[in-house]
Image 1 (tube, one colour):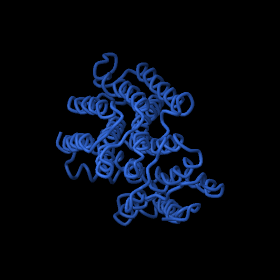
Image 2 (tube, rainbow, N blue to C red):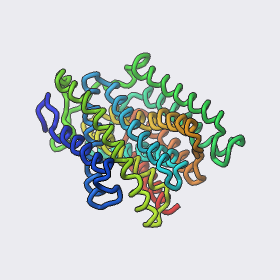
Image 3 (cartoon, helix red, strand yellow):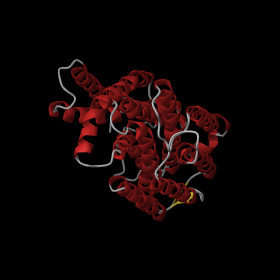
Image 4 (cartoon, one colour):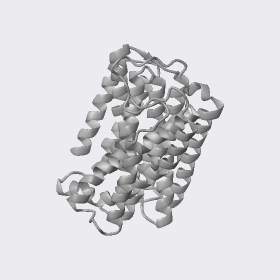
Length: 371
């Protein structure tokens, strides 16, 4: 654990080191496929992702909930969008599907993998946990609508190509998704903010301390200023390294004979790893409301922000965007939304519900590797 009003040194040093390493590739000193570049770049990329999330958490702690969860979700989404666009522009095979694969993987990871771990971890310690039902109901209503518009409806629209919207449809649907997400943020932060605030946070049991430093009081002005500067630096580094690693990643997946959809899963897993750790930690401290805010907020941001931004970029550069899911993916999405509605429809969670979500997640991974 670190001092209450200090920032761990690794969150400052890793992004700076990563920026220097990315500069070596940009200037041509190191080639992006060279092992001497790739292995350190992967480690520095992961460290920079963690650093960006930590700085986002510091800013969120200064502003309070639910702004903390929103800032974290927005930062994760920004990283996700940057990775998607960099791969689209790189010209690798399946680039028109990477947005769909990444965002769909993000939804499946947070709604099954992360929430499953949260419920199992929290249920093991507290047996049963409760949260505010209006918050989950509102988020699930928006999430179900956005998921259907983004991933299911393109399979049945006839104006565009197979599993694609026409340009006009893509523009209107993107604006609708962005608007609906904006209304949800207004409800979450202004109109019904009390729905999303944890009334009683339980203490963390012995041995359940978190990975990131806790902020029981608001961070100091100096700490906030440092994070405000380091957050964009960390995000920039993530974007630069991810763009450099996109080609080696595609070569590795192709050489292994794995489906190209795995690229999206890798991207989603990378950017969601720190947020997943934060969610599981919150559940271990009996803050299941915070876990649900993070999980559902991340899923909403992935669709409500990532898809519209990527869609607008694809329209601008004239590149086709395939959003419609494959039949087995649609089944998994509908099953996930159905089970999530049952899980979060009572206001109480147990280990059994977490186990159900984890089973669905395992099947999702199986179908990704063996379609």
